[in-house]
Image 1 (cartoon, chains in turn purple, brown):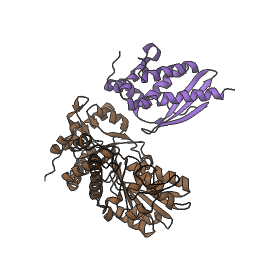
Image 2 (cartoon, helix red, strand yellow):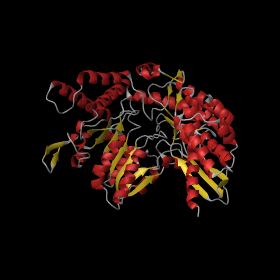
Image 3 (cartoon, one colour):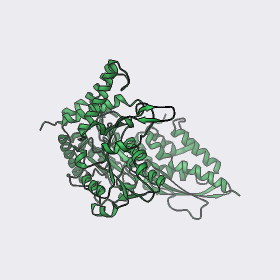
Image 4 (tube, rainbow over the protein chains, first blue to last red):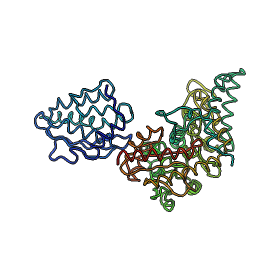
Length: 148
Length: 407
């Protein structure tokens, strides 16, 4: 089992994405725009999705929040961009299972995202880490409904 | 001076535990306080020697339980300067106390077109009940603004208390800013137009000496758990004549005088508002907590907390933190909310926790106030009788460490 200390988690992964978030800012044109927040800590996120057929061709986010929520969302956009909607859902479900402590998290499937497991020890922060992912699931649902 | 926090601290068994292998530095007493041995022993004594239902049995044990329960009511009355125990309704806590007024007095007295005045700094527990009442009745909810240092805009009071105002609901002390509000002046303005004033004393009762008659409060609510007592107990103080004319809140046992198949008459106050078996041992614990605080002396408690607040603000400022709330000590308590550079309060809270330091991060159940301050959240350190300047030093060290992580 990979043991990640809080300090390592912050210094090696979280802060990189917190300081230099990937895919941040509006995405135009987009098919889906969702605004969600985590009332516990006041985190707010806007998620933009652009689909091409069944492929998540574009994704970006904007918002403010703690480092864990912003970094997790930034990592998410890197991970799912270009995936099929099914694969994007599968990754999201894997992350959610990992954060629920149900799975170790497969480095082959999740790559760097496995480091987010360090957050599992801090139950209050799990919601921060999952804000972007839960918003993505909702966005994919909405995109599915928008299909002609 | 006889107050010595290092000695007081020994009354609190929790400080024999550790957090992440480090001494526990508990700076979240505004959320809930720790409990002294004296209160814990009182609860145990009740369970072991006095436990029975109250106001029921004609046997000796029930009389002992009733005496303990009513003794706690006397302690609570004395603590806030109430003239009679008839004014002291035991509830589950401040939130229930406020909702009691909403569902009884306010339902009978607030109509469409009337105004309810709260302030920008209210805790959700003194805001949501009035939002719901306004939605239910068609009354208008207004919010007295605060200034940039977190004080109420008393210069605007005359604009906000009008002939339409029926109720003013205001905190005696802010749980975010630490501001102590000039209740008497607000009460006078409310009474001048025939309105009533409800005072949320959840933050004040643990830390300040006050007298309901000097405040001229019509209703006043506070909770045991923030003042060294157990959860599940609180008080609604109400002026006797108001309580007399109010309809009951919950229906059930104890609150009745005589019951027929289709109707009933009500017990005398305060029992009219205490339906069902009350939280007896919690109330007894609340009485013990009050007596514990009286033993320390509330003036000494306040002086001690102000010294810690002063020191904490000074140190926080030295490391570049932004502090919210009044900077002068006269009208503030030992609650210090702050932010530091780009360190999100939630990150800070998680990081300082690694050092054994418990602080609160978030909106503190005051989202409208966060918007007014223009921040999504703040970190908050709140002090109580068991904290020492060493705790402030530990806080500063841990906060600096969190800053270092983000450097």
